[in-house]
Length: 66
Image (cartoon, rainbow, N blue to C red; front, top):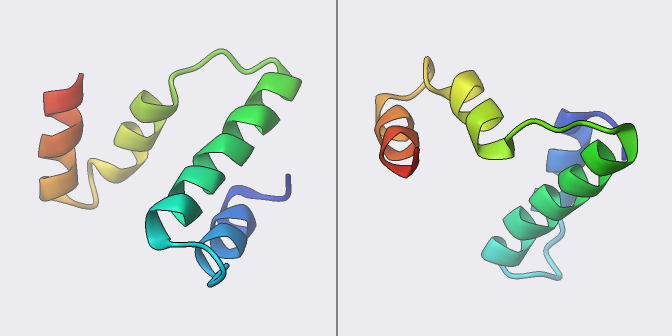
């Protein structure tokens, strides 16, 4: 997989798939990339850490999940 932003752009711009499937494909590709690199972190936790300071709505959703 290429860089995270490039992978996100590629998945989200794939108009042959419905929006939810585009997002899901990004997370699946990222999971496989992390697995091959031996990354053992939590994708939801990592995403929450990155976006919690950007969006209060997102921070509250992540907080509720964790």
